[in-house]
Structure formats: C-alpha cells, structure tokens
Length: 364
Image (cartoon, rainbow, N blue to C red; front, side, top):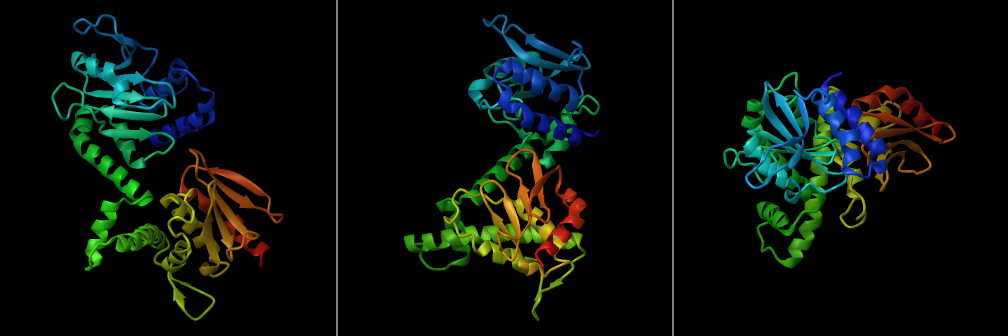
C-alpha cells in the first residue's frame, strides 16, 4: 500500500469516527498515532523512534511536555503538538512548539487536530519556528499535490533537507492557491476592479462594478469548465460529438450552457466545485454514446450534484455526493431507486460505464 492509499484509509476512518471523538487523548489514539505509524511509518511503541510526552527544560519552564517527538538517526527531527479533532489550529495553540523548536534542534514542527496538519520550519529566522506553516494538509479535503512532500518525512525516505529547501515555494504556492480559491468562491471588489480594468476602458463606477461582479463570476465558472473540458477531450483523444441537429458541438458548449443558469445570488447556498464539474463531464462523456451530449445536464443542490437527462428531475442518470470526505456515485435502477457506490478517485466512475449507459435507456 503506497502513501496515498494509506492516507485515504486514514481519511475514511476519520470520516466515520470523527463525531464520536471528544477529547485530545482520544484524538491522539484514534487519528494521530495512526498517522505517525501508518502514514509516516514510524513505530509508535519504540522510544528510539517516537517519544510521547517529550520533555526538555527551557529556561524557567520546567517539565513542560510536547505530545510527540520523532527521532531519526538519534536526533529529534519532528515535533508534534496535538489538539482535539475539530479544534482550530492557531498560533495560540502552538506556544509549546515555539519554545521547543530551538531547544530540540528539530527542523520540522507539526500542529494537528488529527484531521488537519500544519507543518512549520524556520524559513524566516534560523532555529526559530515560523509564524506561518509552509504546508497545510487536510485529510478530508486532500490536495494530492502535497503527498510527495509528506512522503519525504516518512521513515522509509526521510529527507528533511529536501522538505526545508522546498518549504518557501510550498508556503507561497499554498497561500496563493487559497487566495485564488477564495476569489472563485466570492470575488472581492479589488479583484473585480483589476479584471474589469483589463477589458473595459470606461470609468469604474458603482454601476459598472455591479455589472461586472456577475460577469466576472460567470467568466470564472466557465474558465474552470473549460479547463475540465480540455482534460476530458485529451483523455478522449479530442473527440468531437455531434448533436441531434446539424451543428457540431464540442465538449465545451454544453458546460457553458449549463453554467449560464448559475447566476451569482441565485443559489447562494451552493458551491459547485471543479471536481464536481469534472465528474459530471466524465458521466456525460460516457452517456453521450447513447444520446446527444446537449441532453445531459447537471443540476447542483446543497447535498449533491444531479446528472439529468433533458434537465428533467424525473430522469436522473447519476448523483455525485462529493460534499463529504468519502465520495459516492449514486446510480439508479429501473424504478429510480438510488444505490450509492463509494469512490476514491474520479477514474472509478468509468467502472460504472455500462450501468450509466443502461440508465439512459430507461427513459428512452
């Protein structure tokens, strides 16, 4: 089992047990020790590898303990401070990490609540832990691009120098991605003004601001859809589908049409993710062998994204339950009864291609 599979297994456990965990000690036993043991590969019962309740006197501070110290080649390399699952991870919760970081000569400090992991080093000042983590990992909303960086901290391939050398880039790329994600969710006035100034030559009045607020949101949604479509087209060899009429239609147009209805403010409680759009495109790529792709549309709700034939709720093809850590693909039988199938990656949707094609014919 590789590290991605080990992380996915632990994420499933967190999803299933999180509600029952109420204390820090329970969080350590249920989630943090398995992360150290099964994800990072250290023996939590060997004090030469993992030291629980690690103690180092610091000035007038005597007998303070930090939850775990990971030892490699006889030296403390990683310090871990634990908090209860669901607790916020702020600098106020990292005071012991700050104090121990220099004394223990560790290069990596981790603040975690079992689900989320914040990784720190000393980019700003040597031997002083930074105020900002260089890497943030959420096991229930995993950014798979970060897995290779976690791999470098495992017992098998421990390479702290490589992690530290890449930390600055990781820190700023992560911050930029979060900033971009925030703008895609709800663009602020400065972002709207900046983009508007690149395409509009008139004065940026309040009326123009409100006009372009909707246009910017719509353009960003369609931009995401275009990126997904490019990936789908590449996977399908650039295939172009024909609609029932005389007009040739590439994969882009139906997505743009479906997004036209998603005017900002019409569904304030909804957040359509890139992953949902990509999954919808996969379902449509499968089902369009049976009907023209323009007939296959998505309709998002607060709990799932529905894939419908003819934009008709009475003709469900599939449901994408992606709003929790474990993703499910909902499939229907002839009586429209839904069965949920757990999936770990979007590629697994192709495993159900025959069922999806058969479902389309229920309504034909």
